Amino acid sequence: MSSLFSPLAIGPLTAPNRIFMAPMTRCRATEDNVPTSLMAEYYAQRAGAGLIITEATMAMAGNAAFWREPGIFSVEQVDGWAKTVEAVHNAGGRIFLQIRHGRRACHPLLNSGSQPVAPSAIAITGDDVRTPEGKKPYVLPRALDDDEIPGIVDGFRTAAENALAAGFDGVEVHGANGYLLDEFQRDGANKRTGPYDGVREHRALLMFAVIEAISRVWRSDRVGLRLSLLNSHDSMVDSDPIGLASWLAERLNSFNLAYLHVMRGDILGQQSGDVLTPFRAGFKGVLVGNMGYSGAEAERAIEAGIVDAVAFGSAFLANPDLPERLKEGAPLNTPVPSTFYTPGAHGYTDYPYRPVT
Ligand SMILES: Cc1cc2nc3c(=O)[nH]c(=O)nc-3n(C[C@H](O)[C@H](O)[C@H](O)COP(=O)(O)O)c2cc1C
Image 1 (cartoon, rainbow, N blue to C red):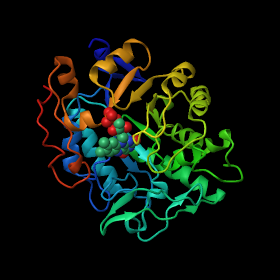
Image 2 (image 1 turned 90 degrees about the vertical axis):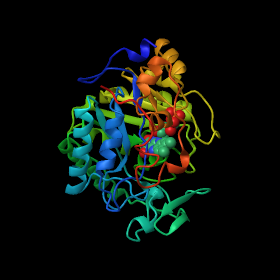
Image 3 (image 1 turned 135 degrees about the vertical axis):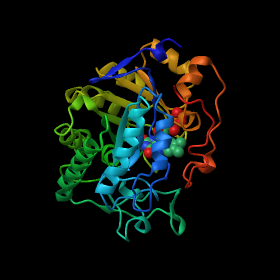
Image 4 (image 1 turned 90 degrees about the horizontal axis):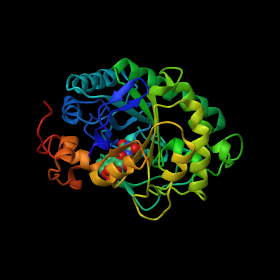
C-alpha cells in the first residue's frame, strides 16, 4: 500500500496520504442549517484522511436541497463550522469545505415556499426529496434570468470568504451531481438561449466565473473542483461527456487549481464511459478519482498514474480510521444506508474505530 501512503502536495498543503474523504451530505445540522458539535466530532474522527472534503454546504440562503443540511452564509454557521475545523486541526487533519447552490432540487418546503431556480425550467423526475412534511416529488424550477447570474457568482464569493473566516484549509467548488454549475454545464439540463446557452464554452461560463471569483478570495491552489460528467443522478445527462471531459481538462489548466476531483461513473449505472483518461491526458494538476474504489484498486490506480489520490465515500462514512484499516488490511465496517440522512449520533459517530493517536 506504499503509493496510498506517500505524501501528496495540494497547493501549499501536504496530504500525508492519498486516501481522501469524499463529500457526503449527512443532514446533522440544525433546522437553521447551523453545523453542530456532533458534526465536529464526526469529522474529527476522520482526521486521518489525507484530506477531508466536507458535505455539500449551501453557499447562499434560500437554496436548501436537503433538510438539515449546513450553510455558510450566517454568522452562526461560520461559528459552527469553525468548531469543526478546529476539531479536525486539533486531531491533525486537513479540511476543505464543499460549497454549492442547490438548484432545481430546492423544494419550496425547505425554502420558505420559494420556487427553485435552474438554467432551464426542467424538473427532476423519478425521485423524491425529504421535507419536514415527508417525502415529496421535486417541483418545476424557474429558469434564471441572465441578470441574476452575477448575484449567484457573488454568493459563491461570499461563501468562500466565510469559509476563510471559519479557518478551512480550502474550498471545493461543487460542479458535480446535477447542482447548479453542473446543470449549466451539461446539455441535458441547459436549454437556454443567450450568453449561457448550449454552446459548450457558454455552458461552462458560470462555473469558470465562480472559480475566478473564489480565486480572488483564496489563492487558486487552495480551490478544488468536483465534476461528475457521467452521473445521471437527478435526471442529468450530457450528449458528449467524454468530449466535454477532454475540453474541460485542457481549459481548467488556466485556473491553477488545488485539484480536480472526478466521480468516474454513474451512481445509477445508466451512463458508461471513461472520463478519467481524458482528464488525466489534458489536466496538468492533481487528479483525484472517486467512486467504487477498493483500497487495492486505489493503490493500483495511483501506482499506474491514472489518478494522484482517491476519495472514498461510503467506506469513510463507516470507517473513521479507514487509512489505518487499509494499511493493515483490516476488515471494514459496512455502511448502513438507513442512517445516512437521519438525525443524531446513531449511524454517524458510532461506527467502531480506533482513534488516531
Ligand atoms: C450519504 C452520501 C451523501 C453524499 N453527499 C454528497 C455531497 O454532499 N456532495 C457530493 O459531491 N457527493 C456526495 N455524495 C457522493 C460521494 O461523494 C461519492 O461520490 C459516492 O459515495 C461514491 O463514492 P464511494 O463509492 O467511495 O462511496 C454522497 C454520497 C453518499 C453515500
